[in-house]
Amino acid sequence: MPRKENYPGHRLHEISPYIGKIRPILARQLVQEYSRPGDWIWDPFCGSGTIPLEARLLGRHVIASDINPYACILTRAKLHAPCSEAACLNSMETLTSLVKMNEKKNENKAPDWVRDFFHGETLRETRILIAESLARRLYFIVGCMLGILHHQRPGFLSYPASHLVPYLRYKRFPRDVYPEAYEYRDPIPRLEAKIRRTLANPPPLRTTRFRVLQKSVINKYLPPRSIDTIITSPPYLDALDYARDNRLRLWFLGVEDFRIINQREIGNISTFSSDMAIILKTMADVLKIDGICVLVLGDVTRSKRFHDIPNIILNIVNNDANALVLEKHWSDAIPDKRRSRRNGKATKRERVMIFRKARGGNNG
Image (cartoon, rainbow, N blue to C red; front, side):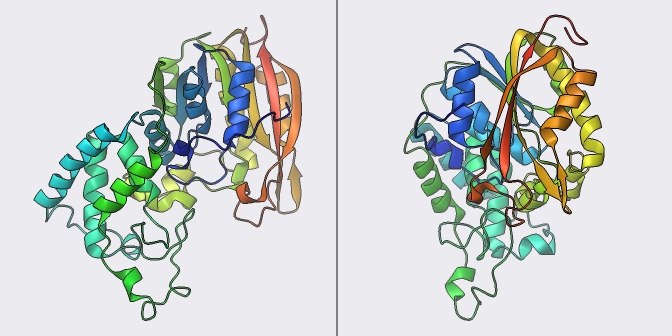
């Protein structure tokens, strides 16, 4: 499917960083091509919420799911974004008062590796803001907080650090040369500035329904033949480490050890086929007859061994979900800036596969 337009994506896509996310222009074109306004779209690997956001902006109903809590919060932040900054800044007044009222709250020590990133008072206030926002289901505000959590610029909350993956940059910014970079950073004005930047181009009023689910409750909310279209991008094996790369954000969301998430993710070739067989069976079951399933995949080379992921998927479909019939597929190069942190060597192109659910088969 050739790209026919130059679409940079809505500003909400940049609310908080996420490595390896699908390009907004590709997500938008897939939604436009394979669904209609009012259709239900499910993204079972929603990641940063790019596909769900584009579906919502195009008037589709959305169900999104992921096993990573950061992915779920980030997707909720985008789908719950207010249509103006006024209501959001009203909530900020409440949060500001809570920070001032709870001067001794969250005094329990954070792990050393977390405290290394922040001035002590910045860390305490940031924990209050995120915890209180989560308690009030102010997901958009949580997303904005996570988006300014760490970086080297003055508008962010941490000591000098990388933006996507949390690593401190002491050598590049020594404390004795850049003392201002290690001073207290007030999270309130920085959060308000982030909200204004993000809502400079506010989303339209919501006219469709959406739900973000943890994987464990999918069967409860997705009865057979309830979904018109599935559009998703499964993990590219261990080419990207979604939990480790987001470990600092996950900690603020209550995940003490990111390795707990790693154990649940599809992370290596030995379990990929068995895990994907379960998921593809579910996809085939919940799709309506003639419904479309779009998979955005990556060829993966690890330890000098090439893994043809699309061919693995096709074999799984033929054996375990043969109600899904491959209609077309194509390849597209991945821009350098979107590749994994391993110098782009693991995954170099995307493969898009289009399946249609036929009547009959194992899941017909």
